[in-house]
Image (cartoon, rainbow, N blue to C red; front, side, top):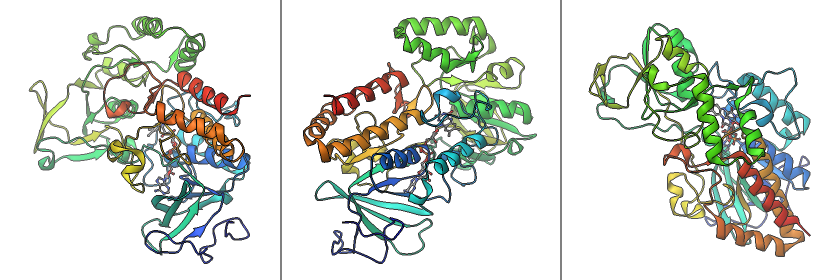
Length: 468
Ligand SMILES: Cc1cc2nc3c(=O)[nH]c(=O)nc-3n(C[C@H](O)[C@H](O)[C@H](O)COP(=O)(O)OP(=O)(O)OC[C@H]3O[C@@H](n4cnc5c(N)ncnc54)[C@H](O)[C@@H]3O)c2cc1C
């Protein structure tokens, strides 16, 4: 039996006789499921669990929905010019289309308003505790979980509630990954991670070095080309800079047609090479390094402007940084440059600080759990991670289907335990399975998935769980 207020929320004053390992009181929430985070993945988890008949308590440390896309929050990684990199139909939730009047690649403000409308349409906000941070998640007997929370910023008392299941939807784009370089601490210029970059005014009139060639690094280099007095763009290797449009269509839509037709990887690579050859041509002509890998072996970079600005002299491609001096940066080829601002667009690392590393296995300390379908961990059938994916397309559709699968698994635990047991065996056998072709070894590709392969795998899991 859960102890709750009239609104179905845990009543902080009412506790059952249960206590956690420290002897502190625990509010028993019965069959209710806890969702951590109210970004894209958390919102769709609440919706899908509710639709399958479960009570949900979601904890969100910020004051609004939208996660990474909520620019009002300090931790949001979006900057003024952020637009979707994946196109609208391959990003949206399958049961909540973005408006037809919106462009192929909506602005981040539109993406946030999309989440706000989604939350209102499905009446999700009444299940969310805003300004509440999850600080501990501990397994207890019977595959249940004690979740300890406190107000964001550490004010107020800690509270623990016991849940039947937990969905971790805490995102993986908010904890900056910062490289170490000799001399960086002595460097006298301004150094920032891309997470602190918000507006091109931060670059205006300055000599800027952008480090990293992910989609964010390329966007910032393009902005620096237009605003800074000088822009160098340092990359570890050569990349394939793909245009956002191919044959007049968003590139991911063209790619998806090939995937739907099950065109083999080698043939898709060949077609992609030819498309690039016909559009941007030989990148080394622009002074860009020759890629040391085939297309699809690194996360796709969709940027139609980078090569354009390199071609117009606005961006100077340079190799990896070797070391920093107080007033200069030495490059791997021995050259020295003198930026005033260095922007590290070097990505983010996932963090699960509220969880003991043993829950996810040995590698969890590095933030890289071994999961099946990037979601399910062996030995903990009532725990799922949502959104721990780096797809070649949009994410929201994938989080939607992950959380539908988890809701059906929880239902099967009640109604068809033999199916749930078979699912648990699958998790043990297949944890760590990959859903992409070969990719370069880098933390950037830990969660890389081809969306078509991934969705087929989720579909198979749903069929095995529910089939006759
Ligand atoms: C610049 C940029 C561009 C991108 N472009 C695209 C794109 O074009 N298409 C695409 O699909 N994806 C894109 N992404 C990826 C993006 O991460 C996803 O779109 C999406 O935001 C992931 O949603 P999520 O809910 O999994 O995580 P998040 O959006 O990060 O949400 C996680 C939520 O959990 C909360 N939280 C975390 N820890 C706790 C805790 N301990 N207690 C309580 N709450 C907690 C956070 O406050 C946050 O609200 C982009 C990312 C960046 C940085």
